[in-house]
Amino acid sequence: MGQARKDRELERGHGGVTKQDQLAEPNGFNYRTQIVWIAFMACMTVFGLFFILTKPHPSSVLGELPLASSSALLSPDHAGIRDGFGPQTADLKNIWSKIVIHDSGFYFDDAEDIARRHMAGGLQDIGYHFVIGNGNGSLADGQIFVSNRWDLQLAGAHVASRTGADPFEADEINRVAVGICLVGNGEQSTFTPSQTHALANLVTSLQRRLDIADGLVLLHSDLSDVRSPGRFFPAAKFEAHLAGTGN
Image (tube, rainbow, N blue to C red; front, side, top):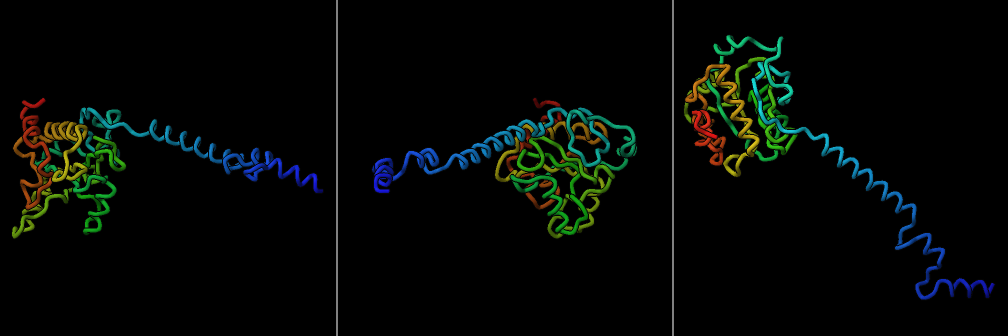
């Protein structure tokens, strides 16, 4: 017993850890713990790669605008008029005569969050016909959400009344104005190039299909006591694009 005890003490040395303990618990962790951590990190790496590879890509060119889309995200693969959806172009021309551009007011935002806020304010659904994402939410940068208001050809609920004005005036505008919302806050930061590119394509497609003149493509601030889409919205460049002189 005495000799065995001395042997163990000699084996422990100054650190008080036996060679067997060192093999079982290198650096304070046993092998089982290390294996669990390695397996966990490997799973996280695989999941991260899967997320990156499967993240939707922003749309680049819209091409022809669909008359309806079942509230889907518009992409080049789904661009174009599809048979059996929505009213005919001639009917659309008799309904829509203006386009109004907004911002959502929040940099981290998407169509679902906007819809929740609108419904909390008393609407039955999102008030816009289209929403263009910036990548900070469920919409990819430059990706367009088509709402039920466009699918069902319902009046918008996006133009606010001016202070002291008859609310009927705003209601009349909402009946004939297509509402497009850029995710972001144009008073605080610029919109992404993908957003403005998608907006330009969407607006010109709408103009062509609905026969809307450049002078009837408006900012929300043109119609109401608001700053939307904000001072960072490239209004001059956008007007030049509509006039055919922009890049």
